[in-house]
Length: 459
Ligand code: PFF
Image (cartoon, rainbow, N blue to C red; front, side, top):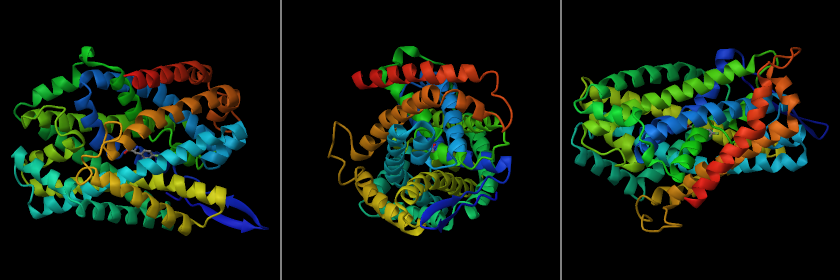
């Protein structure tokens, strides 16, 4: 991966010398690094558990195929056309009145990052717990006491979130190109292999079959307006959509590259990993005698240690797994922070170091009440939700789909045929199916996403 971005000042004008992805694989791994993260391994299994299992999976898949794939292409192509970060990209390609869509994306990225680092902090703590043998049990009460002690404590999880934030800031200050890309190219495949091994172990645990049935056999009587918003929000969260990350990454794709094929690879990888994580966590929950909605945001942390404990060399697996999960979270969190930093740089001319440090301090401050909402502030509810859940709900279920809807309208109606043309490598005509893609962006996505948003709001 030879991605480099260098920013120079000439004649008082800010100009950017942009880098480009060195290889096709490099881009796919970096975009997949942003997409694959806690959303797949931590959030997807418990959302599926809480929202009716198989029916949620089916709706999620429909959201990915109908809206997700079209929007990943739309964001990437916008970035490639503009060669700019989101606010400037919307402004230059679609006109000034669309730049607030980029602004919404950056704000959403910032808020998501603030609660993302809290969960990423838990993964750091779990590396230590696995190494020290504190989790060497299959007793679900002991495991849930360990988890609840951690997240409910006033200091420890905040320190872990702080450590994670510092790691992210260090990467972003240094530039995304060097270490992180090379590391994720190497480590993501390792995470994948480990995931497959854990799925094999989980599905062969006694009682696991019921979990698979829950995951794969849909029962549509459980579907409500909330299931729909949860599924679309999760699809967008998982694909890093509606948050400017894909626009930024698209801006580094060279003109000669076949963009739709790359987008397809990223979407497929992300979905495959979410489904594998479901096959790991849900059967393990049934095997442990838990019901799928139990544990909420803690589900993954509650059942995986028991799966490790039931394997030879379990602690080693545990340390490796949580370390790789932390790396997956880091590659995602870096893309969130990068979106905010690039915005501050491009729009206000702040230096990379100042922008990174300033935004990291601000997001850490916002992470504190999120973390405390599992302990000291657990009783404080806003709109019936804890602070953490509220931020998650407002960003995932409202801001992301809304950002996606506006992006679809903008790319479908305003940019239109120019966007279709830009899907192809330079000098070639638009792909034949581009008319269908535009139809989805103009009608299917806005109406579908709009309908889902309304369903969610009226319950
Ligand atoms: N897609 C990441 C995940 O599933 O964990 C989270 C994320 C990263 C969302 C980057 C948005 C983003 F811009």
